[in-house]
Length: 147
Image (cartoon, rainbow, N blue to C red; front, top):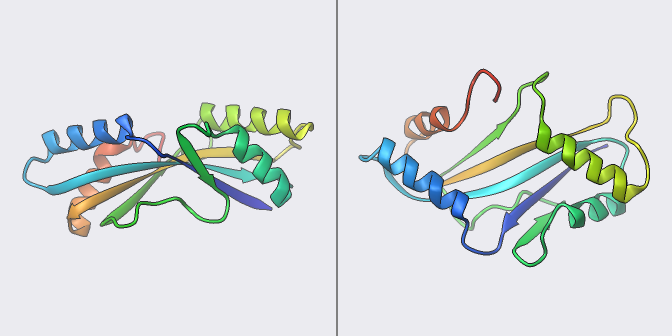
């Protein structure tokens, strides 16, 4: 079973603010008004919904973050969403750490072929078109190691 846990901050996100500031300096003519970030952990392993809930709680700081295993946490409104994750074969250190966290809190080692993959969703707000969103996406990831 493949499960996805998404985690989003409940307070002002310095990482999202950094993306916004950088993108506005690179593309000053774009009408980009906001950026929001959600982290995602895709679990490719035999795991129950209850087990997924246990792992999600361990991957989330309850004071400043919330999680969902039902859907991807997104802002109420946005123009485009960009998901960035590692290409197959590239070491995913965050995913490996999430896998170890899962193993520890579930009390079992993942089997051969089972893994956890990390990615992030970047939500763009403003009056943007698809071409502009694609320009931004190219700026936000390294095509040699990320998709």
